[in-house]
Image: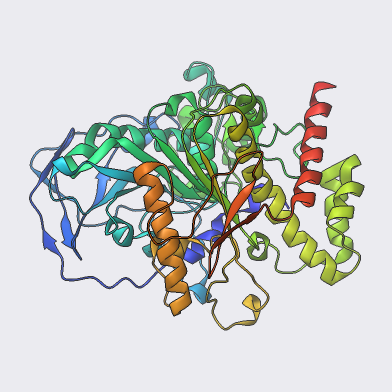
Length: 529
């Protein structure tokens, strides 16, 4: 149950949502720092697709920080999405997930704006997609920003490099780049935010009111950007859906619930990757085709991941927050009630117990007492709960507690428990609110395989309004919505997003406290080495 198995399948909830639109009309060109762009007005929202925010990361720019976009002359028609970054496509026909076109030339963004003029200065929401850092894209229909834009915000979605293209470290790259390598995908996200700061006013947005939001790997990215000195000042609010990055650095690579490698460990993985490619140097690897690299890449589900490189990510985020070394903004963060259902379709009791004992070492007995697995049915429930808590709920709870203690920005925590309208198929019959299930409610885009009921639309209207209110003023509350109290360490209330929504105490606190003890034990073990 490693965190690295999360996310890529999460894209199924966002795919091929049916969004009806009025006939599109072209708009007057808008000036960016690289050239003029012309979009299309659809349903009263003007959409600009495929705007380059960085140079194509090809040839000598492969495995380098993103460079400024190449300027163009004339007017660029921003009327179609750019290809997604290189990845092994995740296909899930039962939920309408189809393949996406890919290309190594992929650093583009999209803008949805209801603004009538640059003077509108609307709050900006910047979406970062999930997919385990190995899959995902901005063209997925579930991420269409029209419905959120209609609520009076400007929405931007940005692409970032994935897998080995986005996160490979190597000794040669470290020497070439001044003592760090890897994390190119995070640098892409930062470059996208820098583009927003420089250009979004022309589209009617306010560069001083930017909220980043994302789900799964996107939510983890939001957490990482919240701790990265390179992202300081680029956003004023953060929304993380099933994210958080508060575990310590892995020592052996087998620790349960831990995912972050050091630069040295990542360099070893990069060296092994080049050996598998049969290349003698980074220069040679930069000459290989993108398809060849993809064919030889680590497994699609989580084979590549951000690292503690000392540059983008300085180190253990838990310690950074303890020391008040982070980008202190209001945050809205949360998890779903049955996150693990997507990742653990079945498990046998003996296999579950073996996994826990292998990953959690001397702490395994305490874990198994909190998450027992005496029978296959009990093991399945515990495996799903354990995945939910170790991967999502504990990092979110920890984030909330640490920022409430050391920060100034208010903290709002949610618990999404509303069961989506899953397809009528056996694999979904015992699912609750699984991982990524909230995305359709945030964007208001429900896949054709999951037609929304009246209750679903009510919950979606509430959630999207909470998100938009937060982007506008750093507080999700607003007229007609159930009151959402801020989380504090003296009043640990979370908003249960359901029909009806209401504030509740933190769910499963005893289990979270067991995991808290486990991670404290891991950190203490590191000190003793």
